[in-house]
Length: 632
Image 1 (cartoon, rainbow, N blue to C red):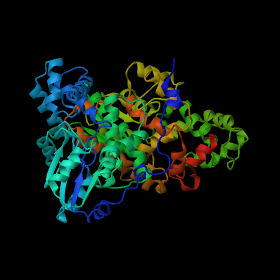
Image 2 (tube, rainbow, N blue to C red):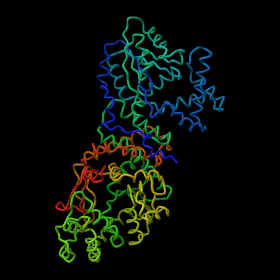
Image 3 (cartoon, helix red, strand yellow):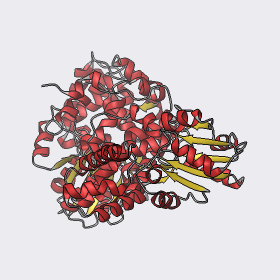
Image 4 (spheres, one colour):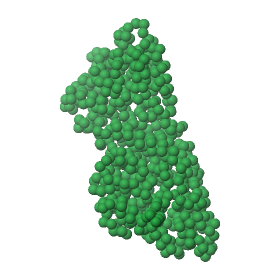
């Protein structure tokens, strides 16, 4: 069976040459307006010039309308009715111009939907979704301030009064006149609508027309001697870079938000901002809605967002929802390994020894021991023919693991010293909750599983713990799979049992986890654990990767702007926030199809490879180091 996810010829590539918002390199609104001040009259096209819609294609609005009308397949019905109405008009009067009333006569005949009700509902829906192009709004206001005579000319089935209402609803007012094809039985394309406008404006006036359709707005106007200014359609520009395969409605709303924001011309953005906005915004938005629904359906008392990935999750979650108790919790893979050490020997030996051997930058055995506060074991190394200054490498991994195993009681005792502090910390967080949900990015749910073990089994705090992850990657964790099957771990995007094709795609290339986690890094170091003090305890953190913070902040700004725009556009349509994990992943799948973008703009990001905040024993690898090591 053909799998489109693995069919490279079917997948479009993202924009790889920098900021997508700079593709058109439009002049500033001030320069665009200034360039037209010599003309007496400025004429504007309406749709996709003055007014934008948050949909990849204008007719996708009919999907929303169909839901309101409770009419199955309404978009197809509506499009066919318009096409038939135009065919009938051509026979009856020799042109294809129709009104919305003509269209709904046929809709009523086919569906029983009252014509007037359908017309008014479509207009109401257009009023909800049409919004001022921010770039053209600036241009328009500059021209108005110079007392220029402004007209609008539109090839459209809506009536003049409807279009005026749409324009005024978006803040465009003060037109000398508005000319509409449906009321004049002619169009810009056949040049007759321009002629009507010219006749009304009178002789000896100079005019320039601004529009996004090259044939009707530019070519036809120029053939009549009208000066023109071409405004590239934001959707035609952006759709070529949007991800394939999303469900039709979510794909359209997603593309509509991205295209209208990046390509209207008002502002240009950095590649890092766009990485968050284009490839991470839909995922973070969809995941937060999924978390909220899960919590409601499972009577969760409190949602716990784990550091550091939980930082952006929680900010977006609290922006969207105000009725769900939640808290940011300092936790990490390292903390989880340390405070569940008595049952996680395998995890300790893998993370603290085997994984260290694979690092580009070396770590000494002494450095590892001291960073774990196990310096008292250094004197025992010679018994295992190990030297404290030896680097951890593949050749001595098994010997070092043996060293730890044979001194396991000491390791467990030392790393368990903070257990009482950890318990107190979580008791204060839970605060009597009977059900909590622990949220993390992935990939095996170890954070949630560790906290579940501590709260439910070790401390017996009479609180049920649910673990939620964005995605689950590893196949060799049978316990992880059984937890998913028992619904102890909830997975949003993929696992081996859910959206398996996405799981296979993600697992096919090394370090996809790292690229995915770029969305959810935070502007502070990774948490390493708790340390007892005279005042109680303090939080211990890894060495800060401060050079990354400016980039992380831009990524988060992009994500948050996407969420804000989506909420602004669709806040009255809760079902449009039900973004499947499949849809949420596809923009990211697109960017990892060609890693040149990530290597170019994120390759210098550095990652701490120590254990805790011990500067002497800390090493850093860049993302380029990791990619080179993997041969990518």
